[in-house]
Image (cartoon, rainbow, N blue to C red; front, side, top):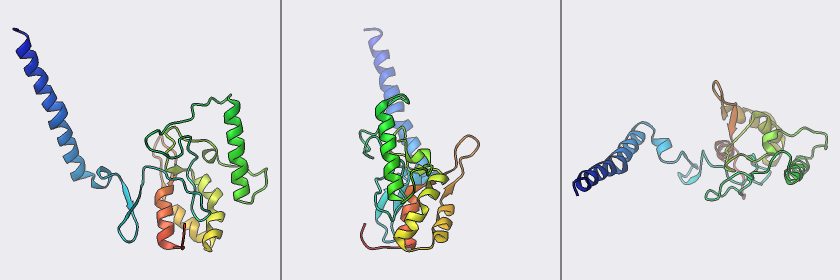
Length: 191
C-alpha cells in the first residue's frame, strides 16, 4: 500500500501531462503558426469547396490530368502500403511491364520510349502526391492535347508547381495542386 498511492499519483500526473497538456499545447502551437498544415493541407476549388489534400494522392485516370505515381493499395488511406515485392520478384517485373505498356499506349509513344521510374513503381505508402519533373514532362503533351491548350502554357504551370527538394531531397511536382490549378486555369466540363 505504501507504493500504491505514490505510483497512482505519478501515473495520473503523467497521464494528464502526456495525454492532455502536451497534445493541447502542440495542437495550439500548430494552429497558430501552421494553420494550413494543421488543418490537413486542404486544397479548395474556386467555389471554396474542399477537393483534396496536398499530401494524399488520388487516382487520376483522365487524359486531362497529370497522373500520380502508381499505388499498390489503390490510393486507399486506411490500408495504404507498398506491395513489398522485391526487385527479383517475377510479379513486380510483370506489373512494371504492364504499367509501361499502358503508359506508352496512353501517350501514343513507341515501345522504345523511356518512362520515368516514378511512373512505373509505386511509392512506399501508395499515396505519394509528388512526381518527378521528368514524369511531368512525360505527361505534358497528353494533358495539353486533352485540354486543347498549347504545351508551353502547361509547361509554365508545371514550373509554378515545382518544389525544390533541398539539400537531400529530390525536386518534385505536387500532382494534387497542379491538377487543381489546371481545373482553375483551363476548366473543362466532366471528369
